[in-house]
Length: 105
Image 1 (cartoon, rainbow, N blue to C red):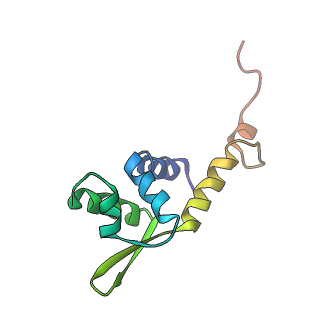
Image 2 (image 1 turned 135 degrees about the horizontal axis):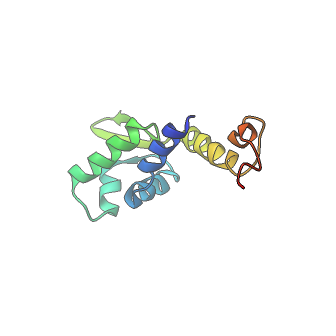
């Protein structure tokens, strides 16, 4: 994942409501009506958040009768966690290995 892609991903996660949605979905799949009941915003606002989360791969969706169901994509969150963790340790592919030391006088 490039730094630009990681930054775009983190921008999606910078919304508190979206983080709450992911937290709710961590307990299992939910229909839109269950999610809407938790929040104090309109159905179109929920739809906007869900579209963003689905488009970015955090959430998958499927139909169950006349209900739209949502579930967390655990692999996507693990991938992001792995990338963030890699920033805290020096690795062979780290940018710091390509930089000169002692350039400041």
